[in-house]
Length: 70
Image (tube, rainbow, N blue to C red; front, side, top):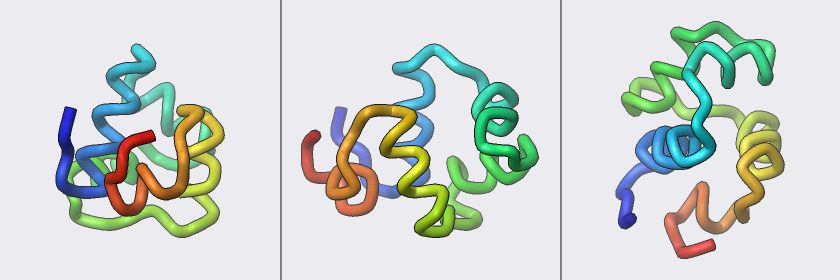
């Protein structure tokens, strides 16, 4: 799936992993509204969370930030 924004890619990877926004928030120790904000492109995660997300979803920084295929 081609996604255009960091938020769209986070949402796509989360759904592919079969986890809820609430579970992702708990895993990262952030609020559910934080995850929602990322996915709706109202905010972008810091590099700290970008790295955590790449590890959690087993994807590359390149994919999550730029959108190049894994």
